[in-house]
Length: 193
Image (cartoon, rainbow, N blue to C red; front, side):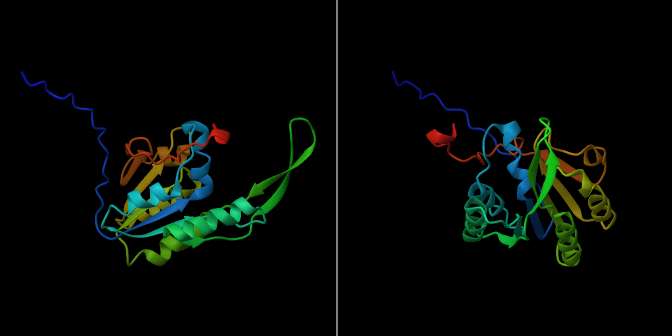
């Protein structure tokens, strides 16, 4: 009697249905903080490799601030080696009063304007716009893309999507990074566990 091998369940990956030439905008500061909910870090290489499985995706842009910290410089260099188009600018440090009453310096580097302008510059060349950001400030941009009949996709993490975006009911596709069903996570080294 021949024993049948047990099949290991295959996790289905969700595929985006892209409609024509598409550009991806990765707001890395936003994506980086998804780790708080995921309890894992997103691997920029795996993310890029996933998007490159779509023939419609012609450009993947990585937005991240530049400062003197070696990890910041390495992050930008790594993203460039991977193949992302890099958009960067200097990080600002703003004073903020901590609960203890002491003043702490908070890293700040928003790319809302740059992402909006990059969208505007690509309106005629692209049909699809994919955003990795849960930033509610992008709701106006999404409404304008929808009005121009552009495919608008927002990939976010639960707990990291602005309610202004959540309230958009038509013309936009919203998907949690978890829904994509892909292992986007970095291998954890012992000192990071």
